[in-house]
Image (cartoon, protein in one colour):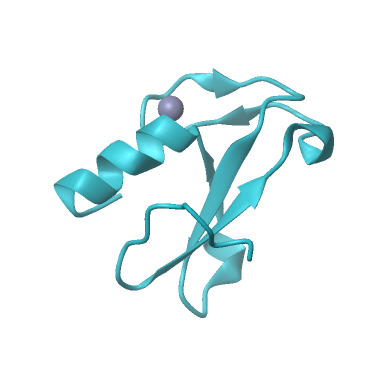
Length: 70
Ligand SMILES: [Zn+2]
C-alpha cells in the first residue's frame, strides 16, 4: 500500500511521508533545497541499509528514477 504510485528504483526502498508526519526540515539530496516541515515527501534508502535513508521531494525522486540513479 505504501509503495502505491511511488517511482521505484532497483536496489532501493521508497516510502511516502505524509505532511502530518513531516515534523522537521530535511535537505533533499536531489536538488539541495530544504523540505519544509509539514510538506509531504518521500524517504528512500538502499535495500538492507535503512540507516542510509534520505528524504527527497517527490518530484526530485521521480527525476532520479528517470535518470536511473539517486
Ligand atoms: Zn528536491
